[in-house]
Length: 118
Image (tube, rainbow, N blue to C red; front, side):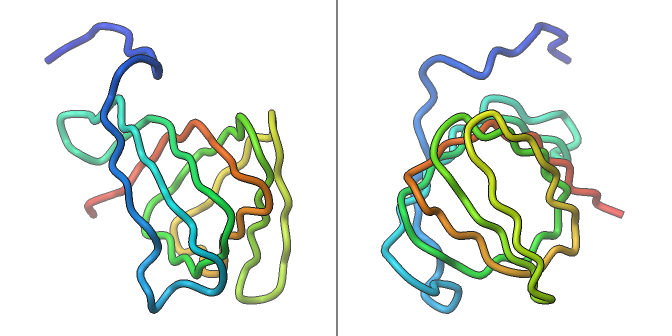
């Protein structure tokens, strides 16, 4: 078990993707994930994420802490609650959240994710 501090910076090859066609609402967003840490149980992850403009449907099975470092996003729940975030904003998306994620300005964030196996 490694007990060294992990910095969320440096060279990590990104996992590049786009939202699945059945989830895409608008635009042609490009998503990049740079995962810097995963615990031994594979339930906790931390890293950096970025995306270009677009909107897609989301369904969270994990709890995610997000800290926006650039750009602007709007999350909207299926019940119509809208929350806008920009640089410096921190928020949690809880497991079970269903709605949309819209990138208004190309963005990046630091994330920490916990996905329970139970």
